[in-house]
Amino acid sequence: MEMKEELLTMSDGVILDSYFMEPPGTPRGHIHLVHGMAEHIGRYEEVMNDLSHAGYVVTGFNQRGHGQRSLDQNQLGDFGEGVTFDRLVEDVREVMDAFKIEHPNLPRILFGHSMGSFVVRRFSQKYGAEIDALICSGTAGKPGLTRVGGSLLASILSIKDGPHAPSVVLDTLGFGGYNKTISHPKTKFDWLSTDRQIVHNYIEDPLCGTVSTNSFFHVLFDGLKVISTTSNYESVPKKLPILLFAGTEDPVGNMGSGIFEAAEIYRDAGVENATVYLFEGVRHESLQGPSREPVLNMMKQWVANL
Image (cartoon, rainbow, N blue to C red):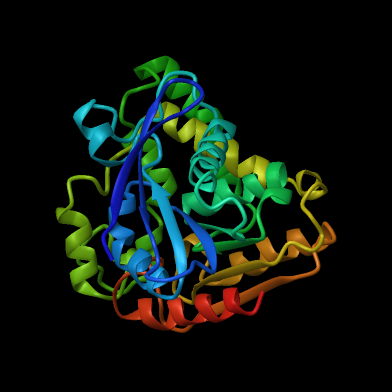
């Protein structure tokens, strides 16, 4: 299937690049994808193609600070002036609603990977009644002290170096420890995948691996605190089906334990259907490389059984 592009203007005037694929027949549902940090929605073209062939309208967009448009505007790795974590959530809502106009009655499944999973978890807190299912890939549990302190450090560095200055310090704080779980890593991104080609493609992609700015990290760390606060989950619909999955070698989710923590937060809030899947030997990018097929098969089966 062909991935088609549509430019959408958000309520604050920012233009975002959105993409969609239509199924060959009558659609069964609408799956919206939210990508992770320092990557772009183009990396999910094969995922979108697979899901569209399974009968779903599949949509996605480049989040602020990501994708070719951000690179062209010299804003890669920066959300922009005055952007909050909840603004990222509003972007998801507005893009989904734009595509809902053409397919108003389809069940809506919201998917997020890595940082995207944090955004969609916040979406479930604010707008959970507007979706029919939630899927989180490569998410994490409660943030450690390092990330809690990261918000304060980001504020200090914003004053010292400027909010829109790339921060090697915060990049190291956020990601520097991930390769420690790997014996003799060959690159700083080996934690992403056991597949050498996937890691190589990521490194060679000019839209991936960007060192993000102080303000970007401040927004992200603030978001991590919000989504880990149990009381914020009280408004999540108790009947909302939730799927969380990760690899057993994914350091973002503490080698698999993080998704159990995330599921427990939902369960403690009274959510009745939070399902967890772990994929043995898989690192962070479970939807890239050889693990894509079994992961997508699991996803499609779970969605079909809703």
